[in-house]
Length: 166
Image 1 (tube, rainbow, N blue to C red):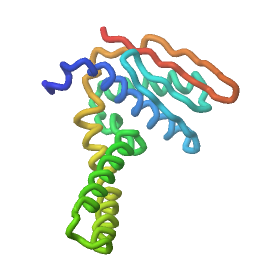
Image 2: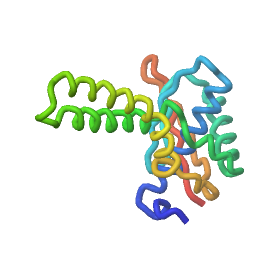
Image 3: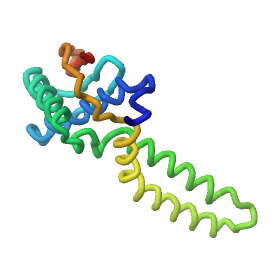
């Protein structure tokens, strides 16, 4: 068993996987749909103009497909993990390029550009690896849908999806 399954954030990791799978399925059914999701211990929240029946069907399908072993659904290309990974890599590249006092400004500028380009190239594949191994979990065999609530605040449609462990 993965040691991360025992840590306090195991529920967040399971919900994060279900959030990604749900967004993927909704996006396949509605290609122009733009959603934002946020996972926590009790489930996840979706922000975007989507019908509640579509959300329920997508969550049900996502959970079943994850339980059937469709691991690719747990990783999403537009996850914040990819963005955070890019920021960390860019910060490290910037620090490395600018920290040498013996190098001239032109040499530091070239190293900065090369480092930032490398960070940009590596951010998504490294971010997706981090999603697979750290921020999401496929340990969803006992996960179940507890409730879905729709809230509307002005033009913003919000769905709160609550999960539970059997």
